[in-house]
Image (cartoon, rainbow, N blue to C red; front, top):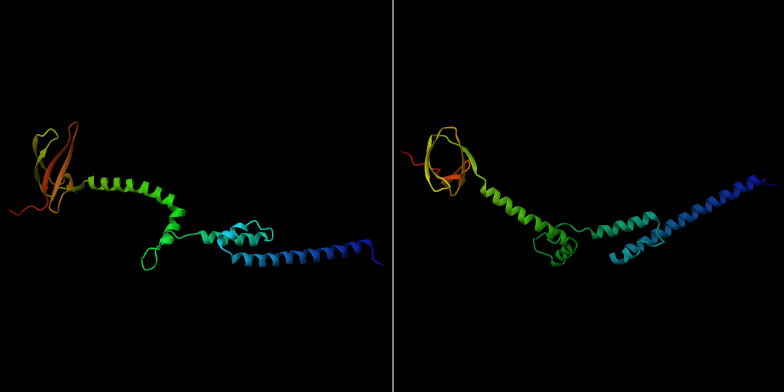
Length: 186
């Protein structure tokens, strides 16, 4: 005859086997249910995210499949041949339209300001030979000045061979002088 302890151990082992079988059955049924759900469209799969028939790992796989289907490439509305897919573009704009508008609103003025700054930034050159220039002061008066070899000059190129030199005069403003970049040989 079995002792009470042996009977208790036997019942414990039996319960442990039944629990393992039940867990295996739940995993198998969950995998089957996941396989069925994966065949459904995205919307129906999304509705089944809290399905009690799914185990946690299978629920995670379902979430990942939905997330992967919602991931759109940044420019996936362009085909490889370069033509536009209107359906893909409308989907891209639906999910990223607000972001695109914000980017445009920020980038357009930023690019315009950068281009304006670039255009208004002079090129600093070192004078290779002595150069005499007639400067027009902000007051309209002309002033003749000779620049020596090694002096620096701020030039705004206007065309291929002409430029406008500019220099700052304290408490007066910028003085300007036209400069010929391709001097004729004497």
